Image (cartoon, rainbow, N blue to C red):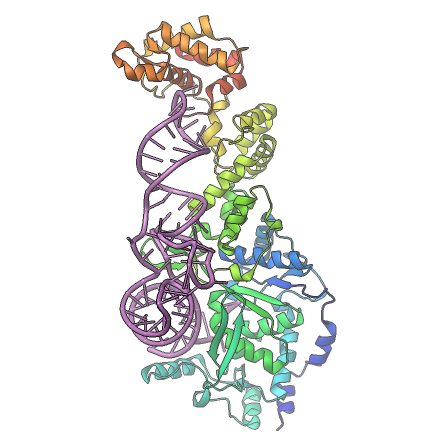
Length: 553
RNA sequence: GGCCAGUUGGUGAAGUGGCUUAACACACCGCCCUUUCACGGCGGCAUUCAUGGAUUCGAAUUCCAUACUGGUCACCA
């Protein structure tokens, strides 16, 4: 029985040839040096921080070279799929402003000429290539059961031999085609394996974009190509898809580095040109329980999913900025020199990429976020806070919406100066800093603590005299503060803190203590932005009203 | 265990044989500014680049060995 006959027996309905597919998916007509890259996740519903970093770069190089970035879904393992898992990924990319040129753009939507871009829809293509390998004697059906495979593995471990399906351990490798046909007709379950032409004693040289030259032993494992469910294993799908979709650059995590020999071999025997590879260091974290460094995990770490940042209201730009500081070591310095520039203006380079996995630093991300928000205009803060709260805090959303101009003025406090305030680390943080500015949230029950001056009669006296004698809404800031000083003086408090510190026995306290009474009476908080500006923002009536709440208590 | 990669302060890191008594940023700690907070300013925070050896007039930078960390060895990706 010939290999051709065997191939026909296994895949009787495959009529297309390898050449047909080559013609269907021709080399892309792009300018010299254009990069074609892709993001190829399983449809698990969410994007991991490490993947986002990879994706950022996968999007960036085509941007820099007039290339193409596409999204492919790798759903050859049913266990990894979740309902609407594709949409979740598409949404995450959309939230992070990562434009998809081609491929999957929705749960049931695809665009582009190199599709389908969902692997489960490409079954025939993989079968065609598998068939062609069988015909050439480079692949064969394997009837070993999982139990048998376990057995040989245990044996190999026991004898300290290299683990895997190779050489004499590859029991089905040298079956006759007649035997194979008989067992197939006998309905025995089987998978398709590569008949590896490699020799473990040989070395292959591989050039990685971030790691440089790496030398591996040649692959001699008869790896699985097609599983018993008829779908391909990652290695086979990767090689066929990235060739047919004409991918030029494959970026992926370091965990793939050890499968490179398999991939190189597959590209070779199929006669495909090897794409350029970049294996990125993993994003790590210190495990709280064990204290050991480990991969940031989707299951254990909430901060691993990029949707976490969307929900937290951390600006996507900040997340990207942070990721780029990990991605390219010279990025941060560049950003410091060009604080208002966009990531698009930065030129990415692989050799500025660190090969070692870096510990994820949420503190740093938050700092970047804080700085980013501080540079936004009051209108931008307002609009983005509105957008955020619309999705995650309806109550606050309605308030912001109701008091639009007021809110913008509020966001403008100490914002238009050269070194603006940096209160908010995220859009979810805003309410924590501003709630007392809204009567709807302000607590009229006065159960909060005053600071140094806490005798209620003294407080009432300060507020009463202030309203009656000193408070004038029209005052400019300097006059306003002069009056607070005069008020302090009248009641026996030092006009200057320094004076008080020099002769503490001469005074009841100092102007700061008096200001604090005004501050707390007005806001119920001891920490607020500039008090004068808050009073300006509130308007005379509300200032007096809030003071009266205490005076009349 | 085999194979592969990585190893510069608490963190991200610069550094490609002399300009390094190791840049910058985050965190931390002081001091200053200041009516609170935040901001800002100034200063501190690795005499040492995992360890040992070799090459060299000279090494964080080159070479070798060891150690440690991570990845991988599935009909998962």
